[in-house]
Image 1 (tube, helix red, strand yellow):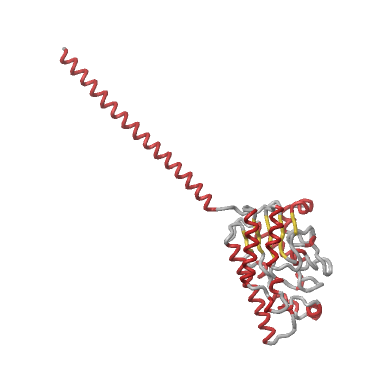
Image 2: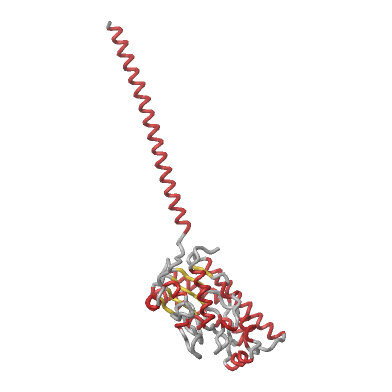
Length: 308
């Protein structure tokens, strides 16, 4: 009986050991699976976070405040009064309902426009003036900054006096750097420089336009001797046009390096404006209708979810 008991106890002990080993092995396997799942989940989360970081900052299609930089076009010069700024008719921050500025479309009523939009542009400004305007803009902490400048860089007394492309590019990059250093999440909308040769084409057949251009010395590099069709005048106008296109290429190149900078893709330059879009007073600056068109082009770009 003792032998049988010992045999039975030995059998039970072996079974228990075997059961324990099997149970322990299952727990270890399940633990390994849980650890694997945890690592997988962690890896997935880190991957998603990494993907979000790679996507970078997101363009704000509904900015709550706007600062406009640029030259006399953004100041609304000659849009509603002779030889005077008319900021209420500005495409960027104006309150004129006929113009329906970018600020009115984005911010709503005139009270909001007055409180949360600022026109920092200056008539006569060239690209070299933009970094200083940018410094003024960052102090206001706008959610959107608009830029329309460059016509005065091309509208020199003669082609030799036009701003060099390298200087133009460097000054624009400096201005963008000022904004980005202080306002990393602010969007920057950049309009292309208008087509000055089209301006000549629209007005050269008008005696009034030619007379105003001559007497007021308006953009002589392009508009001097407006009725002259000879080789020298044609070559001069072509040189100005080439410079404007080069300016726009510089704007596009610099803007492309900033995730929150949107160049209009040449929308302003390519727009087929007519005499109705030009001020009757100087046949150079945009009329109210011209300002309204600039506002519409800007609104389309600013509110677009993504650009190619």
